[in-house]
Amino acid sequence: AASDVYKRQKGHTMDVKNLPVLEGAAVRLRPIADADTDLIVKWRNTPSVVQNFIFRQTFTPEMHRSWLATKVATGQVVQYIIIDKADDKPVGSVYYRDIDNHNRSAEYGIFIGEESARGKGLGTETAKLFTDFGFAELQLHRISLRVLAENTAARRSYEKAGFVQEGIFRDMELLDGQYRDVVFMARLAEK
Figure 1: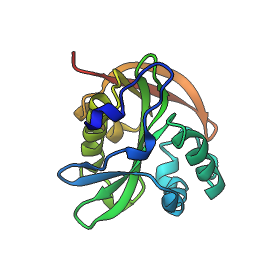
Figure 2: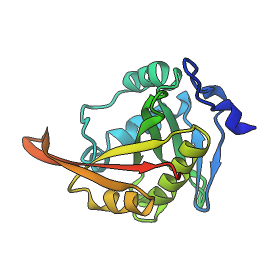
Figure 3: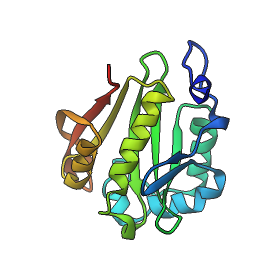
Figure 4: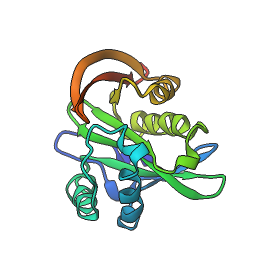
């Protein structure tokens, strides 16, 4: 069974070679590949994406390939490309980082890189689909995220996907010469 591939045992990482494609009503999620590098670099350097990231350095193909080799290939990160099923085009990316096998936890991240795909509910559907996958297949217990407090659209989307606000860290990040509050949210596996 598919879930057998992802069983978390001490000292074992998941089989990153056999990750499934995930089908939703409006989105299809597929594992990231090296061929996605140019798209990821373009999206990550788009000002409307950068403004919602805490990490704001210019993103390069070398940085992305290093991420694929050191994080994705080792199972520390599970990253997917979001496809808008309406026109079968890639529109963004979703991932788990800092996967902790012992505590069965990970940090969630998402960005919709194509501005034309925003505000359509694709991010919310992706969050639901990917967190359900995280619980059922990756055997995660806790999925957390950090979001800039002023990013109210993302916060609403995360709430619709079942994330609960756990705290606000005031003036946590100094970005563009201004301190910003960061909201921590999480979703736990159903008991």
